[in-house]
Length: 126
Length: 126
DNA sequence: CAACTGTTATATATAGTATATAACAGTGTA
DNA sequence: TACACTGTTATATACTATATATAACAGTTG
Image 1 (cartoon, rainbow over the protein chains, first blue to last red):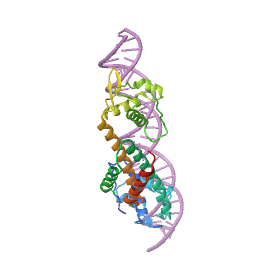
Image 2: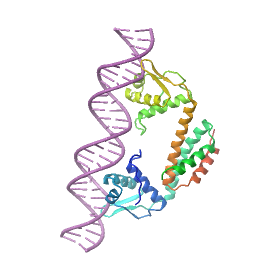
Image 3: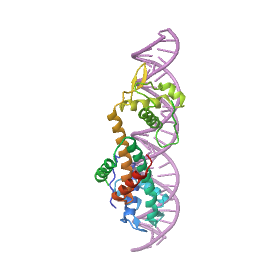
Image 4: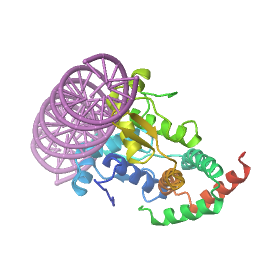
C-alpha cells in the first residue's frame, strides 16, 4: 500500500492515513472485500506506531468503510458509493455557499474564484 | 460588546473571540480607533479567563486589526482595505482547500464542482 | 496615590496526538 | 498441537494546544 504521510502537517497522522485509504476505496484502487495491510505490517512499512494505524482503522470501521475481524484481518466493506458521494456533495455545497456570500459582499467575480480554484486544484498535493 | 461563545465547539475560544471581533470590525459595528473592552472587563463579561482574551487580542494585533497600548487600552486599527481583501481571500482559499480535499478523496471532478458553483452563483439571492 | 489600562511570568489542568511495550484473543496451517 | 499470523486491550510516557488562575510588573489618567 502506497501512503505519503507528512508529520509536519497540522492534519493528524491517523487522519492522513484515514483519508488516503478512503481515497483509495473511492477510486477503486481498493476493491470491496479486499484485504488491507495488517496494522503491524503497515506500521512497520511507513514507520508509524501500531496504535496510530489502529486508530485510523478504528475510525474507518466506525464510519463503515472497512471491517476488522480479529485473527483474520481488515477488509474493505461493501458500500453504496453513490450515496456517500452525494453526502459529500452537500458538504461542498455548504462551502460554496459561504464563498458565494463573501464574493457577493466584496464584488469578487465568479471568474476570479474559478481561476483561483483551478490554480489551487492543480497545485495541491494529492 | 456582544459575543456568543460556545465552549463545546471544536474552534478554540480565543479564535471564536478573534473571529467575532474581526467580523464586527469589517461590518463597521466597531469603527476605526474605537476602544475595545479591556481584557479584564471582557473576560468578566463573558466568563472567560483574562489570558484567553489576551491571546485573542494578541493575534488580532499581530494581524493588524487592533492596536494595544499599555495603560490606555485596545483600539480598532485604521482600516486597511488591502488587509481586509487579503483576509477575505484567505477565507475563500480555506473553503476551496476543503472542497479540493473532499473532491480528491471522493473522486469528484473539477468540472463537476465548477458546474455546481456556477449554478449556485447564479441562483443565490443577492 | 488610586484605579484603571496592558504585559509578563508561573503554575496547573485537560484533551488530542503519538509513541512504546506487553499481554490477550481469534484464525489458519504445517 | 505449536506456530505465525491476524486484531484487541491496557498501561505508561511525552509533547502540544488550549484554558484557567494568580501574581507581580508597568504605563496612563484623574
